[in-house]
Image 1: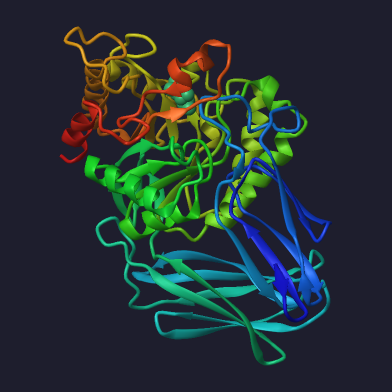
Image 2 (image 1 turned 90 degrees about the vertical axis):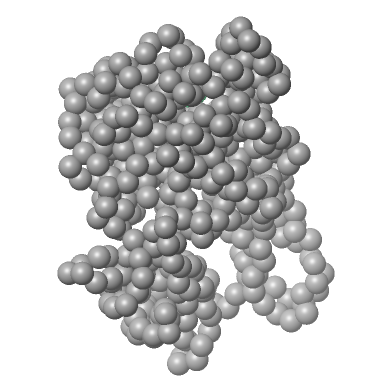
Length: 495
Ligand code: ADA
């Protein structure tokens, strides 16, 4: 790359899978672990000339990687999300956190701007916000010890229209930074006015009870791996809407912000979760587990806070929440996320049934159960049992979500016998589960496992000997071709 006049450069990597080492002109300027959250690298005071940016990417497994492990999805290697390069001055707006508030019949919002002082020097600055044609003075800021300062306040937005699935109204929020009285930087975010609560055993959006009718979606496609072009994301969102879904769970990691933008625009409700799937207590004892979770939790909430479509934050899918030691880590992470954002209810998907020890720590109780596939229990009876397990162990009175259910269906394998693996059998399993959950008023949501077939790590234990190294529980196959279950989902979700 060519630099024509002296400047400072900020490279923003939206996703590098899974460990990145960044070099600018041979100088090591940043490292990052985890494919699913963004990070930046700054090259300060770059003189005019020609430079090389080198990104070394590692997707291997080992003790250094506690979250990307051999699993029932695939860790691709490479730069899987966009990269942006910005010219920055000594101060710039790193992010803006917008939190809508519904009070006394009107909309307000807390807006905080976080300013990065590249040279970490004392420099006064001030911020102004512009939204819906009005300007709001936020006052001045002083650099804090960590080289950032935050400034903002709570402002009234009379006349603002609510964001909802029926009418997903979005506003452009512009933050303008003034240094020595002159406009020095700006940042534009898209926001929506909506509030989500979990009360009286149900989940409310803008005070109205809702039911999530969703799917679990991996960012996976045979043609692109997890490096999705926007068009494929939009095609997935189209299919989800065609199925009648009003929600999606970002199983099992923070999603690409462009997909979240699509959900904001289309009014699709989102359960977003940190990056973890099925980690044993032994894996949670990895010395890197706690800092790698702390980091992905913080980056997930800070980077995706403003998406109105995200109604729920979640952590640690099917990890060791049935142990006291695991419970300590669940508690620490739920408290961390609540500290970062108190405006959304928290949950985690559990498969520990009556051995679960952490329901008291969450706002919503969520179950991954596979009646009809792993075992032949009746979905309705199992669901009623699960309500009892929750009520008996800290989940009494809390909203309940069936966060995973389904079965394998190998695309194109159709047989009147309806044996396991046929599309017919999968359709029967989806039918039995949906008819049970849609008939129970204490169920506030259901997420089918899963939207599309996905690649998994090739391995030797039972889990990773999946036929064709693929998890075939998709309602569509990996090329997004509908299976027989697709029509069943439409029949229930479009009701
Ligand atoms: C678990 C897990 C999913 C998937 C599913 C399955 O519930 O959360 O990622 O592995 O089982 O297909 O068995």
